[in-house]
Image 1 (tube, helix red, strand yellow):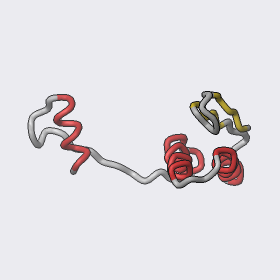
Image 2 (cartoon, rainbow, N blue to C red):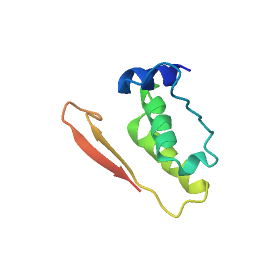
Image 3 (cartoon, rainbow, N blue to C red):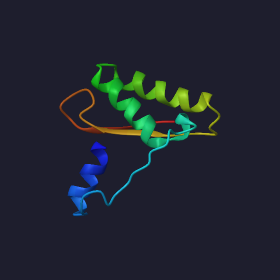
Length: 87
């Protein structure tokens, strides 16, 4: 209901003209957005960057993926920004 109201306001649709249907993702490991959210909550929870990324990579690989790559960038440890790739 809340998401429907946001879409209506953002795109200027009249009231009760938009219906949204959401389904659960059947294989969470194969969904990039789900894994991105998982990584986000791990990092916000205070988990170390490398440990969080390798945890996500391991989860994806254990669920049958042939390969995956996680790229994270920004101020990871120090003041200087950098990018890390985990394969």
